Length: 111
Length: 116
Image (cartoon, rainbow over all chains, first blue to last red; front, side):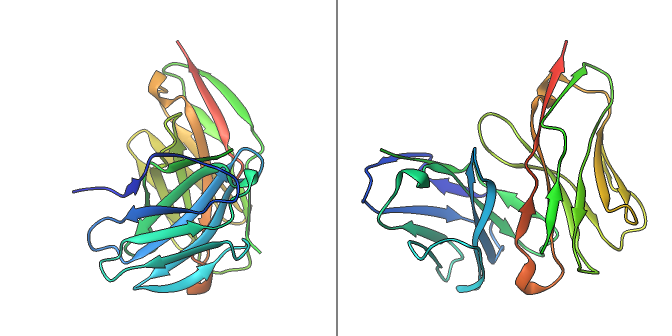
């Protein structure tokens, strides 16, 4: 079966712009969560969506937002990009909470 | 708050030997789950093994086993018969028991290099 699909794989944006990343979970998985990975801060939780509702939120500024659609696909948006937003953004989908399957990630570079 | 500690930034192991990657955790939850993920240079996080806090037996998945010592709050990953393809970053992670704490908390990772 298809895994977690994240698009695009790579992205270069200019400071001040906004960006939208997409994540399609494994079929049947209703939970989608997002993580940011940087060399300095490691892997940090951004937010989790379950059945179109944000269930958990990490400690990130309001510039980071997300949503989930009725087909469980999720998007995350970062507005007013800063250089420090350069990171690998990983999406994970889960059926039960005992297993999280990650996508290949979107590598965002802010210049 | 939940915390995962991985004290080995880097490890070397000879091909075909076994290696143990350390992980200690801290949580006030009675119910929690522990995970190990492998991240090759491509960036994808690959699930290796899961241990629930109420599981009495240590989890095993092929060449991977999890040495779970609940009283010591440790969840070490043991890789038997290392292969060159095992070279990667390895992350220990935990999720809490409550719906509100089901986000994964990750450790800082261990870079494993398998030498021929």
